Image (cartoon, rainbow, N blue to C red; front, side, top):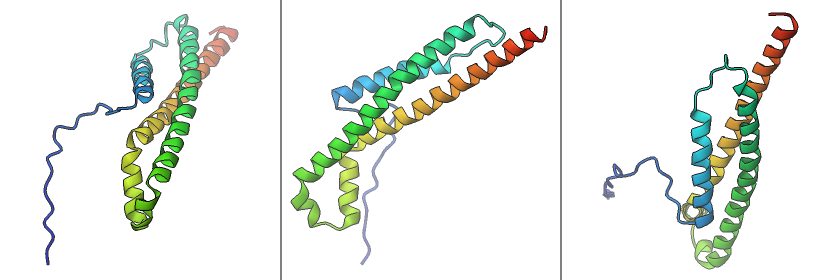
Length: 145
């Protein structure tokens, strides 16, 4: 016997995050602002702008660190709540199916948590890059270059 699966048109899905939780929505909007700042080109020949940029990146890094922690905690709490409220129904399913159902239920928490983790890593990398550039500039000035 052959199974016929319905082909679903997913072409309407764009790159925007679909979030219904208001707290996660605020986090993603703030992350959008930070991401735009990260995407701005920086002229490393404008030495005076580098400390300002490093300061901004550092501020964003601390904010994203907080949002990252909150997003992870919210994800864990959402999973725990969903499982406890649906324990009876989930126990009747196979582990694979129950894990899929749980993953679908907490999807927006997972996406936000992963986004904050990635943004945190990007900010950390950007801060290190500017610190290295400033150290190199300082060394060049000390050597008279």
